[in-house]
Length: 289
Image (cartoon, rainbow, N blue to C red; front, top):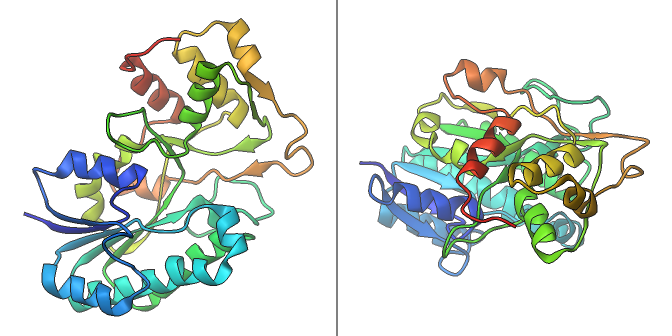
C-alpha cells in the first residue's frame, strides 16, 4: 500500500483526492494548520516520522494578487518549500508529484497550445515562483513528476470546498441572478478534477519529467461559460442575461494559456476534451435552476 504524504490537504483538489483514495492509500494529509512548509526542520521531521513512499505537494499560494503583494512570501512558499520537499523526497526515496501551472506561460507572446518544450516566460510573481520551483526540483534530480495543470473544475460536494472554478462562478451567477462577464478572447483548458484524480496511480508511475495535464478546448472562456449553463438546461434567454460578453477584455492581446497534452497522452494518460468533460459531469448534477 502506498504511504502518501499530502500537503494542502484541505484544498479543492486534495480534499477530493483524499475522499477517493482513503481506503486505497495510507494517507498523511497536512494543511498549513498542521505543517508550515516553510519550516524546513518541521518538514524534515515529518518525512522522518511518516516515511512516505509517495508525496503529493499541492500546498501553494495560488492567488495572483497575493503573490504580487507579497513576493518574498510567494517565493518562500511556492519555490523554496517545494525545493526542500523535493530534497526530502530524494533522501527518503519517495516519488514526488508536484503541481505547477499553465500560468508559467502567461507572458509568452506566441499563442498556445504550449508544448513541454516551449520555454515559459511568466510575467506574474505566481508564475515566476512556480517556474523557479520546477527548475529547482529538476536540478535536484529527484524522482519527480512535475504536472502543469490547466484550470480545474468540479461540482459542489458535501463538506468539501468548492474553490474558485469556472463552473462555480457561472453556476453561482445563475443561482443568484447576478450576471458575470467572460471574455471571448481568453482560451484555457477547463478540466474536471476527477479526470486527474482518478489517474493518480498511473501518474505516479510516469518517469520523472515535466508533463502537461488538462482538457483540449477550442472554445473561449465566454463560449465555455455558456456551454455550462446550456448543459444545465437553462434557456438561451437566461444564458444571455447571465453570461455577459466582455469583448474588450484581452481584445488587443488575446490570452491563450492552452497546453499541448500529446506527451502525456503518449504516456498512456487519457484526458477528455473540455466539452465532453463538462457534459459528462453535468449529466449527473442533481440540481436545476
